[in-house]
Image 1 (cartoon, rainbow, N blue to C red):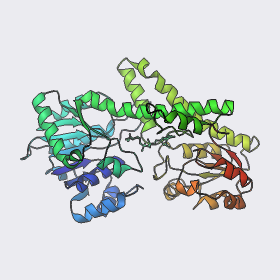
Image 2: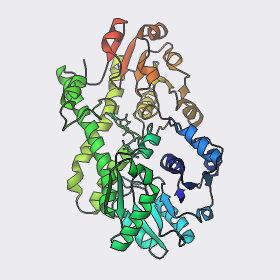
Image 3: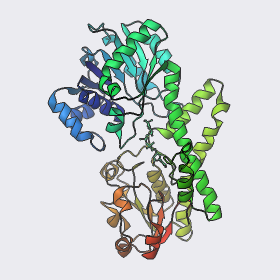
Image 4: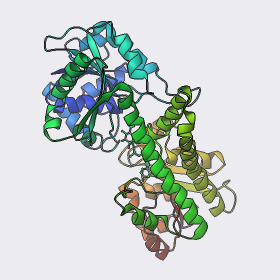
Length: 440
Ligand code: UGA
């Protein structure tokens, strides 16, 4: 099938490439000419395991290309909208500028397709009600609108796109349009559906809500365990054992119960805020008041890490050298949007310490975008002469550090393990003062 993908960021570039991998002929559209050139040369504009190889293969194989010109979508029967919906500058609501621009750019190019109905398929995470609004705009064209949210995790983007836990279609209210649209999308995902991936159909609002409900639940789970970590800190209990023990209950499950410096990234933080803002507009803000607490618990973990660092340094940051291991919001990614690690590093530097930060993937990007920051090549360079080390993104390189070797280079062997990934006994045995999150 001929497919277009509007927006070639994390979501769009991976989706376009995976659609080509499924055998479709794909064009990705983005306003950023530099990004389009890079993608056309088979290179990923971000770090994502397994993505570069797939992208290079599909581009050189001829089934995938990228363009800045909307007119290049002309052959496509299915047009995916995959642009970002960041938090708006003014408040908690999502900034819909890019979605609105994508749909406006696409509408003049929507034409009848010989193989059946033309589809505009929303993948971006949007406030509930957006699909209905956009369907009215698309209504004058020969296309139907479907909402088909994406659930990929950074670091697992290819795997999550090709083998998602489920696929959901938010279909038009008119039964004929719904049936015809569902059939076209089934054809796009034929091989995935044949592999048994569950597919659910719903109205627009339900499909939109599924996405934000899932992210809200995940954020709640993380903040829940971080709240338990606070209780553990007050009582000398161990949150890692607590999480393992409650996780054995099938109804709770062990995943997303890792206490630490909390959730960040371009999705969970802004999605729960946009959800609260939308609930307010709908007059049901009380239903989501708990998300405010989820957000507060999450940001409190960042402040707590800064306060602990301050205490360990004898009540002053000034004149101190602090090594920060990790800048990305999670390992296997170079994404620093709303990163707890970067936030904590900035706060400590802002209070007078000399912060040396390192990250296997985000480091070079950080050095370019923040010339004011000291970016080291690896953990040993960062920790040289440090008065304190903070591990804030759990890269394998940091998890595997040898405490005895690292001790050789620091000025003072104290470490804050902000992700609870080090073995406290081994680090203490090597002479370190070890502080985890919610564990003795
Ligand atoms: C998240 C969701 O997991 C995806 O399903 C969703 O599609 C995506 O947002 C999106 O909306 O696009 P992602 O932001 O890539 O994916 O990252 P997660 O793996 O969810 O991690 C989010 C943050 O939570 C990270 O900072 C991570 O370190 C933190 N986290 C995760 C914890 O602090 N504890 C945990 O137990 C798990």
